[in-house]
Amino acid sequence: MKGIKCVFWAILLAVVMCVCGCAGSDESGREKKSREKDKIQIGLCFDSFVIERWQRDRDVFVSMAKEMGAEVNVQNANGDAAEQKRQIDYFIKKKMDVIVIVCTDSNVIRPSVAKAKEEGIKVIAYDRQITDTDVDLYISFDNERVGELMAKGFVDAGLENGNVLMICGSPLDSNVPMVEAGFMRVMKEHGNTILDKFYAEGWKAEEASDYMYTHKRLVEKADAIMCGNDDLASRVVNALAERKQAGKKLVVGQDADLEACQRIVEGTQLMTVYKPIEKLAQSAAECAVKLAKGEELPGNELAQISNGRCKVPYLKIEPLSVTAANMDEVIVKSGFHLKEDVYLNVSAESCK
Image (cartoon, rainbow, N blue to C red):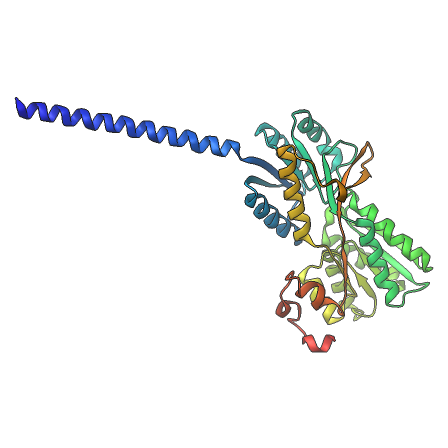
């Protein structure tokens, strides 16, 4: 009888411990969920990762946001505006605190952006404006200055009263007209003639190739070719190389892609525009967290810009011109690219 009682109490103790353990586990799970719920939730929606720099933007933004205690859900629309709209709708459904968007097509995503705002979600237009709709912040580089730096590269190389071709980026990218305006202003001041202006749909580099092959007479007549970014410039330089003209016609781009930096030190591309992506992405992450917390953005650093419907806060980062002469100072010293990678095909000394 005594043995039966011992067994009974042992079983009872085990049951109690199990119940307590389960309750503790359940409580721990609830605490974990509560902590996760308390974290700031940011939806980051990219147009695509076709352009080299976007992956760097993503990594820096996510890292900075996590350091500040936020969680980031990254989506990639692969250049499909309808898909980007679905992704924004998904972020709204998930009740994100902030949605950060690299816009594919303002016309398509505008209703979803308006809906996000109605739901009390903050919206940041990252590096590209979302036109004709209210957003909480537009953060980008000084895009008119980008165009000015491209043009100045030509002028500094001696281009006066010359002939220029413009192979621009996507006509749906709101930055393109700003870059164009800055570029055209300097070209006009120095008497240069724009022979033709072409826009690459979706920033597809192959469209630059097609243009070079189907407009041979214009290409032959041109002294210089302005490219909307370094990816487009890569196809332009390749087409020129086939005609043994690489380095003979001036070519400029932007983004400071590694291959562009290599072309610059090799002498087949004149210059590129370096845009400090780390600073842009870090600033965007900081602003996203501040907006989520209801804190004020750094007003002394903000400008105002019209997006067609209203004026929105504009945080602009200054770009820098990069040539063979300052490659080490701007690109290598900053750690943007490694020296051995930039000078992979030439000796650094030969570029001095």
